[in-house]
Length: 109
Image (cartoon, rainbow, N blue to C red; front, side):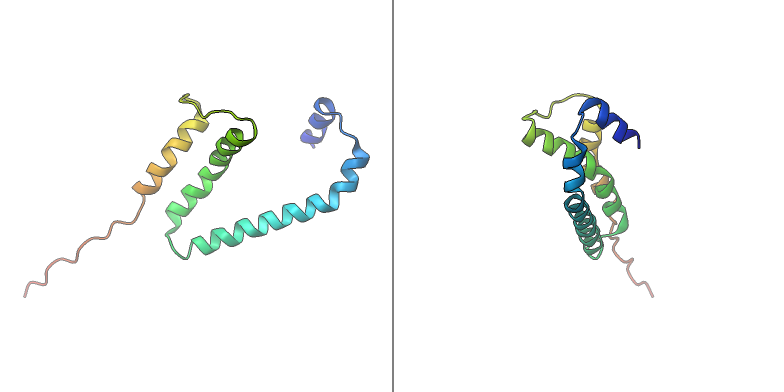
C-alpha cells in the first residue's frame, strides 16, 4: 500500500493505463517467480544448501549493480556502501562454505 501512495505522489501515473496493463504484469510476474524457483531447485541438485542460500541472498544486490550498469550506465565504484560490500563478499562466502572433502584415515590393523 505505501508503494501505491508513493507512486501517486512521485510519478502521478495514469491509472487507466496501469489497469489495462495489469493482466500482462501479473502474467510476467508469475512466470518470473516460477522460473526463479525452478532454476533454484535445479541448482540445489548440484550443490549443497549453504552456497545456494548465499547466492540466493546476494542475488538482489548483484542484479542491482548489473542493471544499474546497463540501464543507467552507472559504473560500479569502490564505495564502502553495504550493497557493494555484500557484492564483493558473496563469492568469498560461497567459497568459504564449500564442503571440505577430507581424506579417509589410513586403515591401521
